[in-house]
Amino acid sequence: MSAPSAEAAQNPASVVDDFKAAFRRLASGVCVVTFQRGEDLHGFTATSVTSVSADPPMLLFCVSRRSDSFDSMIAGARIGVSVLSGAQRALSETFASKVQPGSYRQIPSRRLCGALVLTDALAAISGVVTQVVPAGDNIVVFCEVEAAELGPAGSPLLYFEGGYLTAGQDGRC
Image (tube, rainbow, N blue to C red; front, side, top):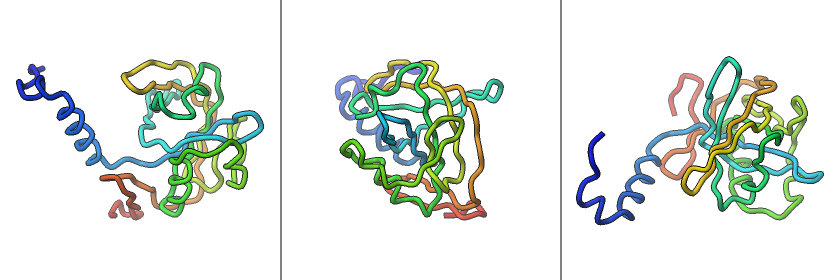
């Protein structure tokens, strides 16, 4: 690994800005991570959902320490992950904004192995948080998967350069 350039060492804000710009160029699938808070559905939009292991099935996602959901990400918490289709952009935008408790009551959801997942997502996964690892201004949340189901066929919603794209069935946008 090479040493940081002299310019980067003198201007760390530049490195952060360049890092953010570089990752805006990485197209990512859009998911909504959901959980129950009290009696209500709660959640957030995530583009950091990653498969960790197939045996046993595990996944991870990242949560900002500034997120309203941060305090709910504890070992033993049951979560749902819904992979969004291009037709579900509005759901991504809704879960990406800060809302008052109970604001998601009108959003169609269902239970999968005890976890709340969004209705009509391309895929739905339920899991249990097993480990939370601090990582800079985020936490990395590891989950053991309890169940996974495919939803209706469709094109995935992607996030790229600060906006949304929908990939076609043939992989083209």
